[in-house]
Length: 220
Image (cartoon, rainbow, N blue to C red; front, side, top):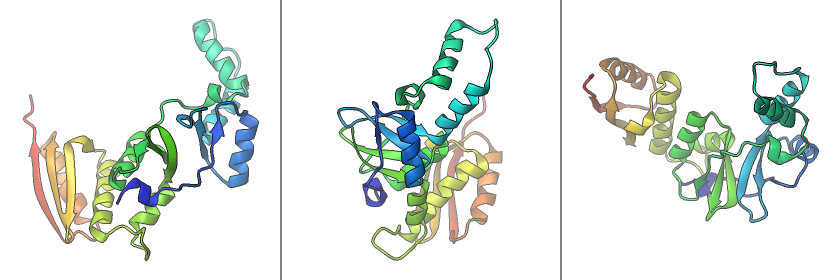
């Protein structure tokens, strides 16, 4: 299943010219914890989250940074604790995906970057957003066209558990599932990782059989 099949298309956004007060009002009114910040060309310039706003409040409580810290740090703290401009508070390193991104890849990005939402872009323009709720709605096999097939949902669940339970880097591991038969391929750092994966697979509901095609890299 692709990103554009589960994304929310009616996305609440704010512009780079908006004020922090307007952003807070939008979040509170719509019950949101984050907003994409859009520039004049419709591109995603940043993300403003409740965490960014709470950090502003926290920084505002602090005193001076002390003689040991640089003037640049002092100025950055002052800006973030006193500015009412979106561009001074938003996160500019935004993780985005294209329309055709597999939802498994979207889930992995959320785990890797510890984020709650991923904007979907087409030629740089925002076309939708995927939240954790959107992913969960797709993963649970609910009736409707947007439901993920059983094998695909199981593969997403396995990737999520490999990362959250074992802390594995999935860039070196591929997960495929067919008829509830899970196959893992790629490279591991140790036999201990292999044993942990085996135990994990034995405890994931829906996995009827597990094929281990993982290779342990030779320790130098």
